[in-house]
Amino acid sequence: MLTEKSMWGVTPFDQMACRIAYNTLRYDGNPWTPATESGSLIYPGNIGVFNWGSVAVDPDRQLLIAAPVRLAYVYNLIKRPAQAQEKRLFTQEGKPYWNENFDGDYAIRISRFASSLGIPCTAPPWGTMAGVDLTTGKTQWMRRVGTTKNLKTSFMQGRFPVGFPMGMVAHGGPMVTAGGLAFHGATADNFFRAYDVNNGEVLWEHELPAGGQSIPSTYTGNDGKQYVVIAAGGHGSLGTTLGDSVIAFRVD
Image (cartoon, rainbow, N blue to C red):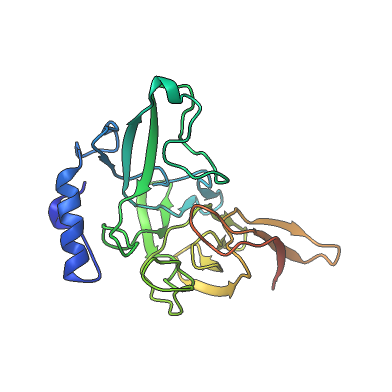
């Protein structure tokens, strides 16, 4: 649950702006707060806690591995005039028309709850990797996942050059192997990582040429070796680097 004290910023100024914005939005203290014309705060938002990437299960160790995301979003209903049933109300021509809801009574604009700097108003970590013991239902470990490297912001040109371990948003799930590894490449920093499923320690990482917002897969090659493959195509909503690569790594 969010409160005014939960609001966060990299400076006192954007933190104050987030607090002001928080008090202008409807928030019922749960993810089922209805969208309104004046604006509603939804937390967790539409990108989490678990998105389409879902979770991975290690049946031998009875572990569930997941990459939960906790990010708030603002939902605004926009009344669609009778004479504008096929008109875009908030998206630009040539861009996807998400949630325009043509021929409906309302369009709905969904935007990340962030300051003018493009930084979330909620405190990090925004993304984590977690291991849950399926025999007890308890979280066995949880670690921040991803860094600020390659992050696209509104306060600087290009991409952020330094990788602070803030715990970043991921759009895609993990994959586990019988050898006790969890592979995950969906974070917004373009890195593909291998984790120890027992404690979440990062054992290996590799920077991809584009965003790896996908789910890894594994196969046995003609040489009898195990390979892990990931599609690195980027993601428009996350603003990660776009590409068209499919990359395989051998597990030694």
